[in-house]
Image 1 (cartoon, helix red, strand yellow):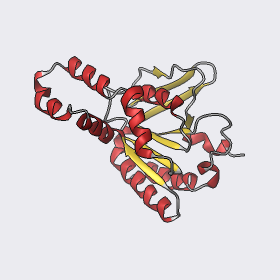
Image 2 (spheres, one colour; image 1 turned 180 degrees about the vertical axis):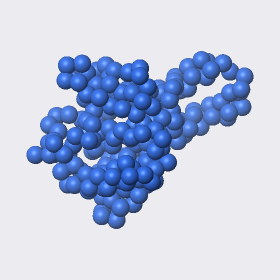
Image 3 (cartoon, helix red, strand yellow; image 1 turned 90 degrees about the horizontal axis):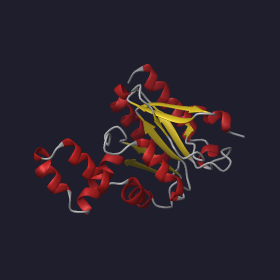
Image 4 (cartoon, rainbow, N blue to C red; image 1 turned 90 degrees about the vertical axis):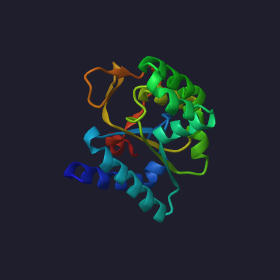
Length: 204
């Protein structure tokens, strides 16, 4: 674990242990969706950090759920009876056909987000979401974030994003997966995910 991820590990433990964070204090009427960015090269360290945070918080009595979106997609494919076909026939499909099928089967509004909300349940105090890089390009982060808006999220979701998240007051919010130059704008004007790096300034 390098210095950057060690610092992130310590900061996340501090923030996620705060009662203000768990009770969603200081975010007014915004949804409790938080984005934690990281360098894609640190993927393995981030997974260790998330698993470690989960254990520490649980020892403190905090109810935590960790969901990997790639594993969730696999569950959806299996439940719908498509997983074996995908594995067996992938080599014969064109890349565009395969991506289209995966997008349709695991559509954020119709499949992924409803499954995510079901898996998380109503008793948890914080959810840690990983795997966004692993489901690209057939599912994109901004589509998942927008699908979460009407899903009645009732506790903090921390979404670990391998790239950059920029918020401009006049120009909207932009996600840059893997540090790519091209941007993907979150289109819903009312929606704003909170950059976890700025959470401390939001505590009242």
